Image (cartoon, rainbow, N blue to C red; front, side, top):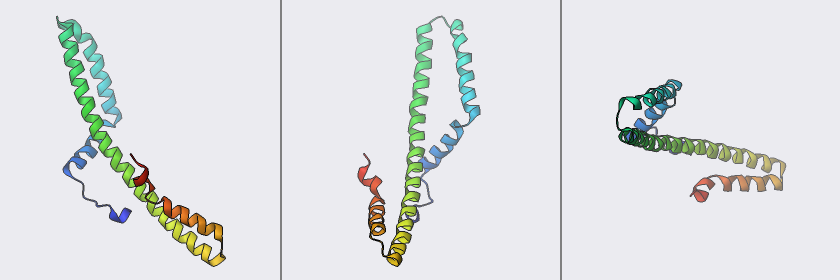
Length: 128
């Protein structure tokens, strides 16, 4: 639930958030495209094409690997926050529905309340 969420992030989480903000900008993508465009003709400057290809492949693979890990961290935290909000909304809705069902004595509304309350936290049981 949202009240269980702490506003304090670890150093890694703060770093991952800043990295995600940094790499998600249009200028960062443009800089990457420019880097590739500058890199492509630079092969002509080096005699050993295999070595140059190995260097650029290694560097881009390492950067990609690290960025995936950082972005996955921020995505996981975002998903958890959204799920907490949905759970809070479902809990509040079930309380309101329960109150309405008591006033109007509706059995189908009581059943909907039971199903809604059972769905709160379901993501923890069904996730891999």
